[in-house]
Image 1 (cartoon, rainbow over the protein chains, first blue to last red):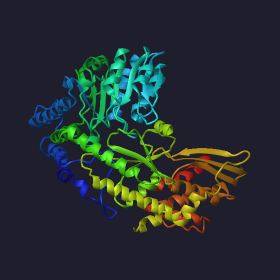
Image 2 (cartoon, chains in turn green, brown):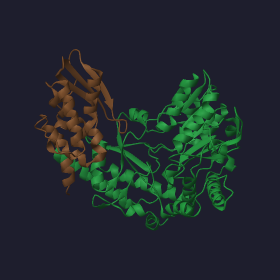
Image 3 (cartoon, rainbow over the protein chains, first blue to last red):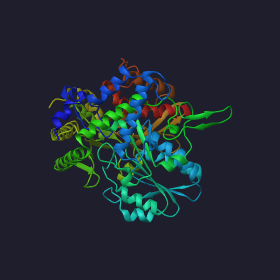
Length: 406
Length: 144
């Protein structure tokens, strides 16, 4: 994998930040976009912009072909059985809420359980908190091991006959934990529960085969995998999606409309009320082409090297705490002793290094870690070991700076 | 290494308040208690105001946060002690203006230490840190 050539595809990486070349280490929040994706969106607006599924005119056909073509790319990317199982949404949060409203609430009743973990991002937690409140079901947590991983034995004891839904992240956005989805799905299915997977940190970084994993629902966001903001995907098994009522009603999703009632289009369109996210979906299709050309396996291997390099490098420093298990995805979460992560991030930014500081939309996990906030450096296919060297140098400077002012 | 820009953010007086916070703890006896957090970053503060009529007799704070939010809380509690609630609210307005980069006569408001936080206005991402304690005070005043 030629990282220098890949970097050339990302115009933003040429930016100077506070007089320094940008080192972008916040891809877990959102990834940067390659020229190919920017061009695909631009070209759509310049040559095909039109509404989909209705225009008799030529542009309408072009737009529909491109939009539905993007759906087929997503289907192949996930190895879903049919494009009927691929719904375009605004992102992971909207996907989760669609499941929570369309599937969970009508199916949950008192005595039922929804099982989650304490490492969930708020988007895979709050929809379930609200769904159990509305239905009288209860929320249960699979405990975390000391290193922030989960054990399958704990999954087996937490999931019971009363469990209707197991909702779990593929990859933790804070700890970097990679969860064994296939095994957890098997346990859920043994108890006739469905498994909902938050793939926001999974799909951008590794091959995801929903048929092999046998997950019932899988959600992810385009913007974390080189696509524009505002587009994401909800994958669901066809029989489940067919059993669900739409969550949004209006144009585009209807079949027949009478004065007092209406019927819905078939899958996947019954879940896509209103003019869909046409340009976003086309951008996502282009991003999938881009990632496929490089190869998800190559990307994963490169990122694992970066994560290992970063962990080793930071570990040699004094006064730093690193969180998460040994085997981790493409990120390192840490805190410097006696320096609040916001202050760390501000000093790093002064040297052109962009990291995230805060609770990472995972407040229950912060509680488990017994911190209010952390700093996080996250990597993607365009990052290099030099980026990590710049991070480490800047962390040394941060410690000096705060050492001096104290 | 030169951090000129950062020095305007992290001035000595700010670091002093961060390391040696004034009025940290809780008020003895009856007090107006306000909890406030910054949901975007997780910083949280509890502010307690002991009022005698409309005069702030004592102000104390506790909480967790970055150097900017905690030093601002320390400076604020110092500045508003003994002030009338209305005057403290005027001071809060002036502080907000300062955060927007406007010139404020800090002597008029007796908030000289707080002048040190002027540099925060150049760091838009950190303005919310500096205003957290003030928002808590305003919320308390509204409840009163």
